[in-house]
Length: 496
Image 1 (cartoon, rainbow, N blue to C red):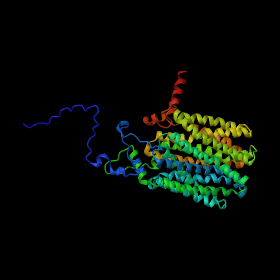
Image 2: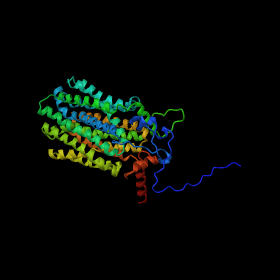
Image 3: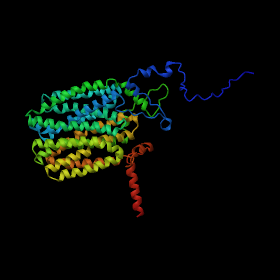
């Protein structure tokens, strides 16, 4: 009869004995050469480990201060958004000078707003392809290059018909940058606060640009095109620092991160199916966010672009004082994005934006109906303050309602499409102002604010914190809460 090995219980180790570790027989048991030599970007793209819901791996959220590389990237994005704000904010201050220099009407000068719309639409359609084939490195190189391609010819004050074409290039660059970095930061931990800060940087750029442009023209007696000398130098710096920061963020890294975040597992031998822009355009959430951002950006840039002209023509303010008012508007927007970003996440995006928009509607009515210069400056400053957090909060709401592998495509499309509001609505104001006067700005903006708050109420999830996440888990459709409220109202009416 064969002897069997009997495992006898081991006596307990003494209290002061050193801890016993399992024997490591191979180097690969302790560390993997592949992981040890991987770059930070490749490591971030690996599938997350650890248990999550339904036994799936728990999602790993990137943090802005994970390492020096991420910190450097985040600060370069702040710089890029500051330049984007300067690019958008300066146009309103330059409009009176453009009209005088080229001797053109409100409608014709408004083309400087309309032309970038085409660039934003192209950016909305191509953002996902650029990520897929070139990664974030491609975005980092392409966007400042497009700005330089527009600003350098503008600095030599070309004939007016070429200016809208040059601004189309600038709009394309801004659209790609806006969509790419919103999607990147929107997926990080503490996204409300971080998005609030980068959009605060945009507001900072839009605050200082009119002040710089107005001072150069009115105090320095310089021609309008000298402002673009400043923009060329700043964009050249952006090209260098952005390329350096995102050089390792290749297309492969982007594709691997999408595969890791995918909600579907490909069969053996199959490749992960790319989530395309066409696929996310079938989602109602994508279009609701796109039109919400279109209206929001349209209201923001219509105010920022036409405040100077409104204050000069309607409130009869001196040119420099009118320039200060638009500076107060962008300053309020900047402070609101930074400060209210810390409030929004705590009370929930759905409720927060509802409150902010109701306050904006009240302030817009006061700005329109109280014909006093000082009062107008105060109202428009607070209007900017409560408008500020709307864009970043909408991006965070989209990340909570959509699967992660759709974020770059869906948020990129919505942000770039929404950015077109910076072109189409200010142009509409100028076209109407040609016949009715620039006083049409106020009812026009008021109508946009009412429209976007109605759109916002169509999002599922209710007004309680955590509602958006529950809506995604329960697969609630767009307009679910509206239909639910309507049914309850009908039932209550029937009972009474």
